[in-house]
Amino acid sequence: MLFGTLPFAAQQPDQLYTASRQQLDVTKVILAQQAAWNTGDLDRYVSFYKNAQDTEAVLAGPVIGWEAIRKAYRINFPNRDAMGSIEESEIAVRALGDNFALATGKYHLMRSKKAGGDAFGTFTQIFEKTDAGWQIIFSQNT
Image 1 (cartoon, rainbow, N blue to C red):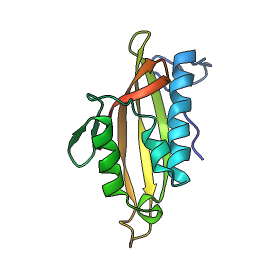
Image 2 (image 1 turned 90 degrees about the vertical axis):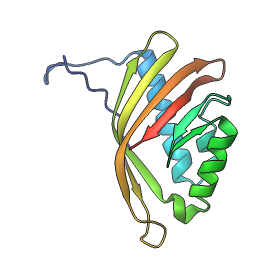
Image 3 (image 1 turned 180 degrees about the vertical axis):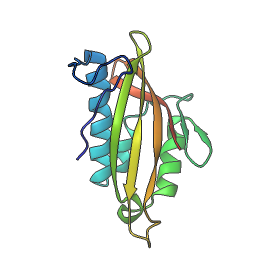
């Protein structure tokens, strides 16, 4: 399982850091999204994106709009084997005002060679605080 960390450059190694409510709430969304992926629940995974025309995910290229994002995930990950399991680490969340946050981290997608093999990289997500809670409005994996 993933354990999120919230590193900050000014923090000394021996100092304790208390995460803000915003940082904790966004980290919980990332962990819930990871759990949905790891149970093969692609609909739940995509539900963490804001259902809006301007929500964007950069997958193989830019995909704009919630329905288009859902469709792209369905095409790229048509079954449980293609999804494999994902582990995210080194999660850092930074407030961008009261209603927006930036999350970055690393991911490791584990799949059989037949299903596409393992993939590693980094992710960047921008979250918006909505009536439905914190939702992704932009996501990019590199």
